[in-house]
Image (cartoon, one colour):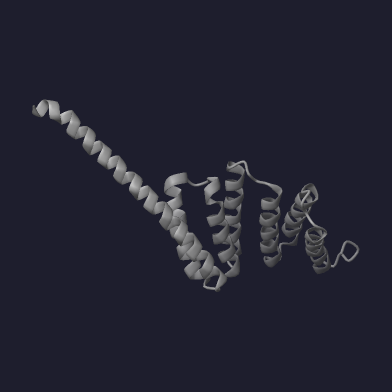
Length: 177
């Protein structure tokens, strides 16, 4: 009877292992979400280094489910980029903004609203780096996305036009400012 019971025992053991894995995945998913929201709160309170720690824990957990460049990672990468920008680590900010963009593209959900926010942030980083040509490139991408978006307001377009004019003023090209 042991021979007859062995497949049943094996099946029960396998079912238990699968159930345990699902419980771990669910638990890790909740932890990843909690760490993300904790990081957002820390960043809002100007605790950028602590926010980065929480973002990276959330990212590590989410990468287990989704891989490196999945749509579901976009907000975490974006949060990391924002913290690095706040710390003056502009090259790291750009690295994570680029990963954010790849995640949007991978999810085929890179809508105009997402583009305007992301490209404005990237333009702001380049402006902070005093790389005005790259800043202009991204601010013009933002402007183009606003023009294509039916929901854009005059204020949206004016805001990015101001950023563009400011760059031209900084480079002493007053005719374009």
